[in-house]
Length: 387
Image 1 (tube, rainbow, N blue to C red):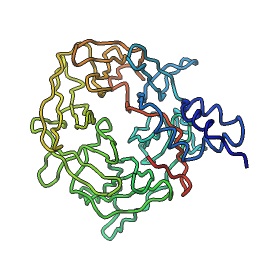
Image 2 (tube, rainbow, N blue to C red):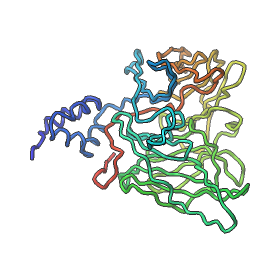
Image 3 (spheres, rainbow, N blue to C red):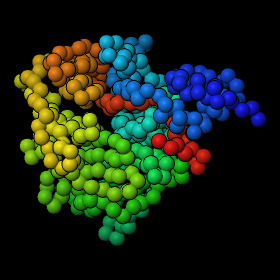
Image 4 (cartoon, rainbow, N blue to C red):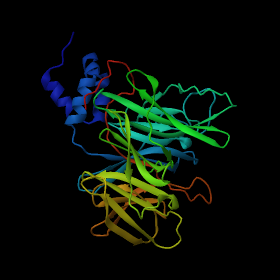
């Protein structure tokens, strides 16, 4: 057996993921090393924590047709230079019955962790993908069986979350399924998918909450997933969290003056250890003004951090790239970077086109901070990462 020296391992661990993929074919020992979970863990932890932006947009291809693509936006450390490139993934633009791949326009990003993204489509199918390695995995169908003593019921995919369980050293997908019989709504049921075991299982715990279905709000951070929901007993909006290790739900109140159900675009982020939230009227006719709220140290009470605006020719704010940098979508369908301190705006060379005349939707869908990695979507007990 050929053993790779510690010097070679150290050098390879400092290279970019793209370079390591090219070195996969150098020799068998390098291939085994680069695909070894222990090396992948070391490479990700040793890499400089420089995050990129993953987004879905519409472009005109070389044939003159408009298509949806996933793209990665990269910045230099001082934000002086930005570049964007498209990521060829095994999706397609229109249904093809002979293929099991999903239709790209229907895919929403449901979460991301350690270089993997979770996607779901309108058919309630769920997928895991590494955009860098192009590995792709369709998850098994639901295991939920609902008795029908009083007639047929409908199952609807409520919300999906994705993250890493540091205790079990495994990636998990949590799925909340709504159950309806006619106009009667029954308590939602919860399934969890374990990547290493490649199977679903049901858990019996769930807060009495209904979900608003806001992909721009959904977020994973350090072992916890966040959704926007409505507390059924009080009919008040809340943040619902799910701890990936404890497999337990928790409710967090939102600012009293925050009313996202009246808004079109709602975003939650964690910055400097605090939750940060804002909501924005996309179709408001006049110049835009919106408030940014932040949690105090207790993660219970909120305070208004700042008010942004009025803004001219802004379609929609997307999310904070850093404490003072806010990515936005302009009316000209171009991404811009707004400095909250200086109020300066920088145009980025990233555009998204209209799919059809009159299309007025948010153009940069599924926009998330993203870390490149070599983490695999393959399951099995041998695929254990220690992050």
